[in-house]
Length: 131
Image (cartoon, rainbow, N blue to C red; front, side, top):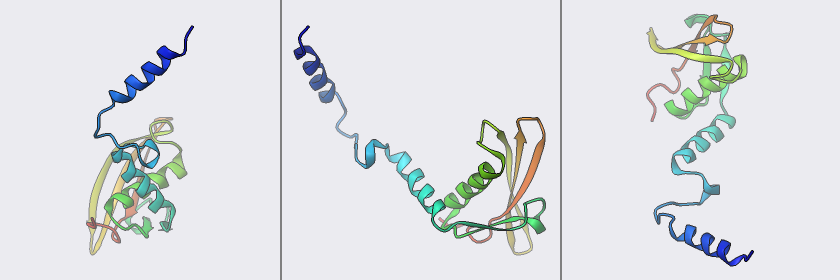
């Protein structure tokens, strides 16, 4: 068996790759770059304060999110740290925006694998509306 056909196939496959694909940043597609950037932001400076999220008065306060996308990623990060992997240990039922006086909240309802539901309030005032 000759190696030449394999080399020819490799060269041919490289020629068939569209010119507009950029393989920089480790071969990650551009849509994933943003997710990587937000994950990096999430790991660098986001803190969770306040209560356990059982009510608006005991909401989990997200601090340090530079914008709404990072803030929402922080909510999901918090839920995964507390309840486990999303779509494995729990599923998102709904997410609602609430306003109380001069504060803004996300109410996230999840269903755990045992069928029980949880409601978690997040105070999103610090990053609400930031782009």
